[in-house]
Length: 105
Image 1 (tube, rainbow, N blue to C red):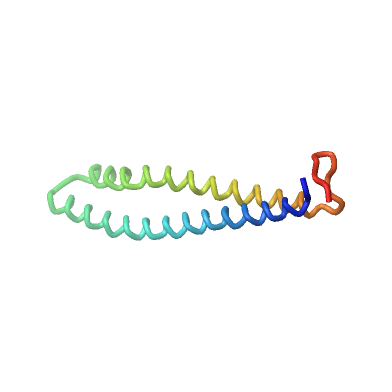
Image 2: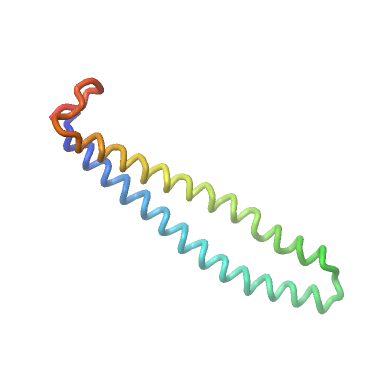
């Protein structure tokens, strides 16, 4: 494998990984903001209907549990892509290549 292509692949994975992390961060930020407002509205309705504190806690727990699982998966994918890109860039930048693993100049 040509050493220069590892740099290209590494940069590509860095871009993809960072994009996924940035997208997940912004999506999470917006969802958290939205959930706070929606949660406040639901809590207000529960309070007006005379519900107890356990119902309020359950409403918040259900809203965040599924979202956190999805967000965690995307975060792991983004981190893996970025780290893979860093490793490929490191290997691709090694002076003289690494013939042992088939990376030649």
